[in-house]
Each structure stands twice: as C-alpha cells, then as structure tokens.
Length: 205
Image (cartoon, rainbow, N blue to C red; front, side, top):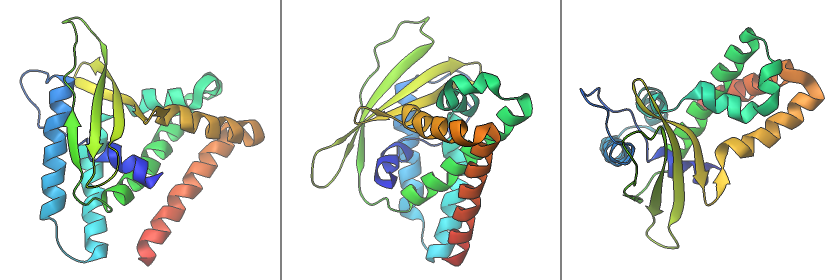
C-alpha cells in the first residue's frame, strides 16, 4: 500500500494562489516538481525529516483533495445514515489517516520521475481525469489517474486510480465491513485508533 500511495503523493502538493484557475494537468505537473525539489533538499535526522514531511503533506499535498467528497464516496450508502457530527468526524479521521500514510510514502521517495499526460477537455467541463506515469529506474512505469472536479477555488482530487485500482473503492469495502459489524461509530473508533497508533509509532522512531 505504501508503494502505491507513494505514486500519488509525489504527484501532488499545494499550489500558490493564482489570479486564474490553473488547468488540472498543469497543476499536477507543477506541484510534482515542487514537492520533489523540497524532498531532495531536505536533510537531517530521520525523526526531524519525518516531522518536516508531515508538515509538507499537511500544508502542500492535502489541500488539493476534496476530503468531504472523498470520504462520502468511501463510506458509500452509509454516509446518509451518519449524523452531521458523525460525518464531520469521519472526514477528520480519514484525512488524518491519509496525512500519516502519505508522510510514510514520501519518506521512501528516491529518484522516481513523473510524466503527466495532457488533458483534452472543453471549457465547460467540471470533471476530468489526469493520467500520469511514475517512471522508476527499473521495471515498468506505474500508471496513476487523478479524478478531479472543478470547485470555486480550483481543481480538487476526489479519487486516485493506481494501476486500475481506485483508492476510494478500496476503502469503501473496508469501511462497509466495519460499519456492518460495529456501526458508523465503530468505523470512527477504528480510524481514530489507527491514527493514534501511527502517532505512537512515529514517536518511538
């Protein structure tokens, strides 16, 4: 899972606000280069680097995701059964989980290169798919597709498909099983426990 998520993490980071909304493929290409430069320039102890990477993910990568939409899709039909408070908690825990997962993936970055395919779209399109390839020093490239939607403040990612496997669909199955067994509160508790465990492991390191 970490290797798969590395492919999507390296491709995203926050873009400085611009007067005009940047095209989705241009955004991913620009921010990919930015985050790679930051990682390559970073130096220091493993613990210090982990803290810096966590900050990088939180400040630069995740603002490009629509976590409410993403969580809603991952929870699926059970989303309507959740109260507003439960929905808020689900989004917060899902976001926290991805922060930690992405940080771990970024810490394994070496010298992968990213190729972003140009997007063919019409002026009024509200949804697009940006196709990319993660090129490694050996082996076949990893195909990564970003499903994006246009919002008031720019394009946002709501799903990532890696080698034909959807991140949202992958989590939907896991979440459904937990909800069927323990309810929505059970899923929130499970995600919270996973996040707490990740924090303890990071502290030990």
